[in-house]
Image (tube, rainbow, N blue to C red):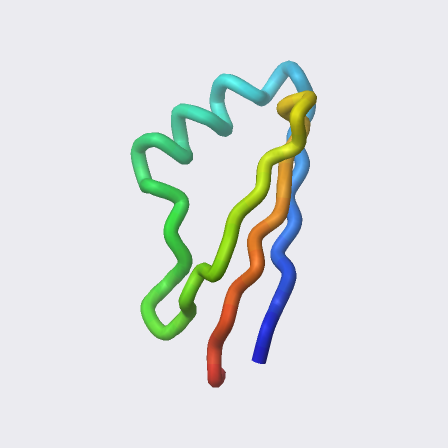
Length: 54
């Protein structure tokens, strides 16, 4: 089954969000495949398309 995961953040939290993403790699948990990830051009968030059977 496909899912769309969307996220947003404020300009004030942008750097914190980027640092957390860089530290963790932003990958989904085991059993979930990330098919694609897109980021808003203005840096306010983005969305990912995920696939899982659970």
